[in-house]
Image 1 (tube, rainbow, N blue to C red):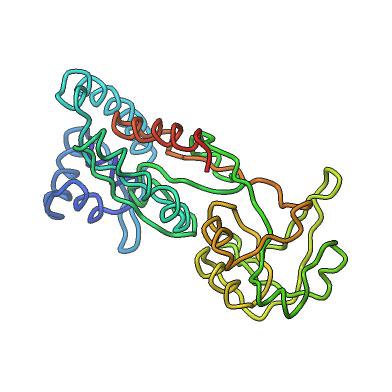
Image 2: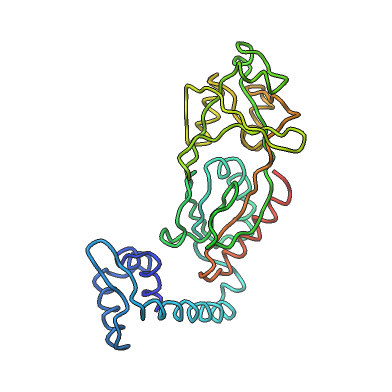
Length: 292
């Protein structure tokens, strides 16, 4: 059942076998034996894809529910219930990982020494089920209705530029002065489009699109381009706090800060949330409750 469920979720015999540490040939034979035992065809295979039959889809739903119950029973009586252990696969943006998660991780690892964190770092969205990821942290408005989302924080944002850029173009004090300025284009990894600058004005949001010589799709590259005098940027405060304190970047237009960005941790709703993943999600809640 566990092999069948992973094949359905990953849409691949080889990837499911790899995750369960089985030879690929064994995985194929096990599914053949399962279909023979049940007397129905569960999976349709071509050279490019694996998909479920009608019977296979029904069997998957029942198997997933049964496996959740088995895991819960075993967890209640196992050593792991007293001392959480195992691997957690998580995914997040590079800026969150570098500036917030990694500095806080020693405390988590000291509390739970038998939990291993497998951290994937990328700014684009991923498919949790097909990638075999337990949970992801996402900044911004959510579009995945199939995922369970737990809010963690609202990340304050600001507008900033380098001192030498401001020395050349001047420091704007009003939004109408932005017509004389340039920006670093940030390209959304999910939409592929440039993200305009946002400014709060009397309870509403105004958008500005400025000329740009450089476009990036990564937070660290975004900041680096700003430090290299390519123009104005907007991003969460935590990402540039150290640079603001050091004076390599300067906040501008503080009266018109961009709206805060929501931060959520997400996980699949049809996958059992193991004790170790639940512990990690709760720890994230504690971490961001302290403020970032």
